[in-house]
Structure formats: structure tokens, C-alpha cells
Amino acid sequence: MPAPQCASCHAARAALRRPRSGQALCGACFCSAFEAEVLHTVLAGRLLPPGAVVAVGASGGKDSTVLAHVLRELAPRLGVSLHLVAVDEGIGGYRDAALAAVQRQAARWDLPLTVVAYADLFGGWTMDAVARSTAGSGRSRACCTFCGVLRRRALEEGARLVGATHIVTGHNADDMAETVLMNFLRGDAGRLARGGGLGSRGEGGALPRCRPLQLASQKEVVLYAHFRRLDYFSEECVYAPEAFRGHARHLLKLLEAARPSAALDLVHSAERLALAPAARPPPPSACSRCGALASRALCQACALLDGLQRGRPRLAIGKGGGARDEEGPPPPPPSDPGSAPGPAGGECGAACKERCE
Image 1 (cartoon, rainbow, N blue to C red):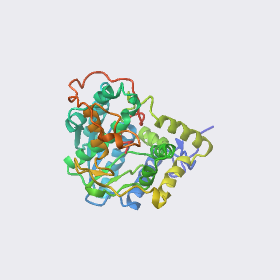
Image 2 (image 1 turned 45 degrees about the horizontal axis):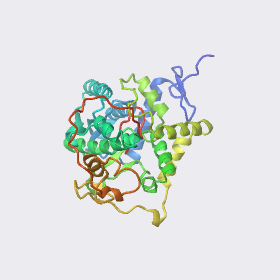
Image 3 (image 1 turned 90 degrees about the horizontal axis):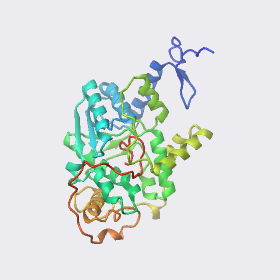
Image 4 (image 1 turned 180 degrees about the vertical axis):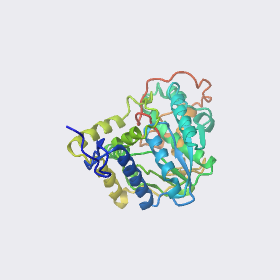
């Protein structure tokens, strides 16, 4: 049976049916519609004002690649300038290939690129070194807890380094729905309360962040990358196989099989969530060590690094915070960042990017 005509241009044959609407479109019309929807998200949400200097969190994966490409197409209409910021977590055999993809993108699209490294920002600690430090602690699955927190801090530092006024990340609707499910499963009311909307306004001196792809499904992100012939890195991080996020992803796929709108329904539910006054987290203050936004005396990044330096990496993980004041023997910063990583897993998934916001 021949493919139907494109419902938009009525000239070309349709190449796909949009997963949620069922609309039959050719590749060119689908890409135009996708870009128009991202433009509407940015304008309706007032995410990027004219004149903004935008740091695009670039991991080399499909989401950040699509985000950078779409924003490059829309930049003249938005009146913004773009700067790619990539984070080198120090994951042997994985991150080098991803960074090579980012470098190819920057060269092909004539966009400036800045790379910031964990080792430079965090006293010599890389993710491989963190994995070795946590391997015997019974918390090896927490690698991505460390990585998500440190990545967020590294992206902020990289954005400030290039003079950015805003940060954008490549979270799509599936990513956000998985995060909502994870927070519900953990009973994490604080993160549920902060998870709504299309980003954060930049309280306490932090740069404003937004997620222009938050209303786009993962399937459509992949389709856009396919039709635009985008070059991206698609291998799974070596620390991801045991990720808790994988369980949320599996559950979401089951829900979507029964209800195709499940991902967006979860995203919109988080936007409308209202907590009782007693359950609301306290207003944030400044970290006593680095001055970053924090809900306790130390921000999460400083607390995690403090645990690593003391040789007690578990102290800052989990809901209990009393153990953070315990003393432990402080080991020197890692001296062998190039050794092979272990098989530990964490919270993220394939091509982790900035998912653990």
C-alpha cells in the first residue's frame, strides 16, 4: 500500500506518522513543524529573551545535538547567541568519543565550544576516580548521583566562563516523565515541588536554566535527528547498566503502550502539583563553602566532594544528613585518573547528558 500524501504540503509522500497526533508528514514538513513547536515553547514560556547569551549543554548525545541544531536555526528569530559548553567527566573509553562528536558539531555549525573538566574543577576528582572510591562502600550504584550533581555545577561554571546569561539543556518529555516517576517512587516531595515548569528562574545568583525540548517526545527527537542527518554519539555510559532510571523508563514504556500521552501527562502533572505547606522544602540559602544555592549548610556538590575527601563517600547520599559531620581520614586527590572504570551504575542512562538536574 503506497504511503499517503503529506498532510501539510500535499506534494510529497508522507515519511512518518507523528507518534502522538497520528498526522502523516513528509520529512521536511515534520522538521519544520518540530522547529515551530520548539519556537512556540521558547516564546510562550519567555525562556530566552532577545540578546541572551545562551550556553547549550552539549554532551554529544541525540538530545543535546538536536537542541543545538534547532536553536541554531531559530537564533536569528529569537535574537540570541549560542555557545556550546561540554563537560568532561573523566570516564575512560566513553567521554572522549562523545566529546569528539561535540567538536565535530561545533566545527560544522560554526559555534564556539568550551570544555570544562571535573578534574580541573573538583580537585582532581574524575568519575572514574569516584567510581573507585565508592566501589567498596556498598553504594556503587550512586555513581550517577555524584555525576549528576557535579555535572550541574560544572555546566554552571562553564556557562559563567563564557559569559552566558542563560543555560539550556536537552531534556525531552520522556526524560522529565521518568524523573517525575523516580521522585514519586522515592517519595521525594522536595524535588517533585521543584520539577514543574520549563526551567528555573535562577534564584540565589544561579543562571536561569530552561528545557526547550521538554514537550517533545523522545521518538520525535530521534526522528528529527534522522531527517536532518545529524551526527551524534549514541553509546551507553559504562556506569549506566544498573541505573534506577532504567526501571522508571521501563514503567513509562508500559504506560505509553496503554496510553500514548502518558509521558506528557506526567510532565503536566508535575507542573500542576501543589504541596501542603508542611511538606514544602525550606527556602534555599547560600552554601557556607562555595556560596552556591543550597538547602543545607553545604550545597550538594560540596557535601559530596567533602565525603570523597574524607574517604566517606556515603555521607552525603540519601535522605539522612546527620552523618555528614562525621570525621574520616581524608585521602589525597586521585593520582591515576586514567585507569579503567568499574562496572558500577547510577541514576541516569544512555548518554547521560544533563539529565540529573
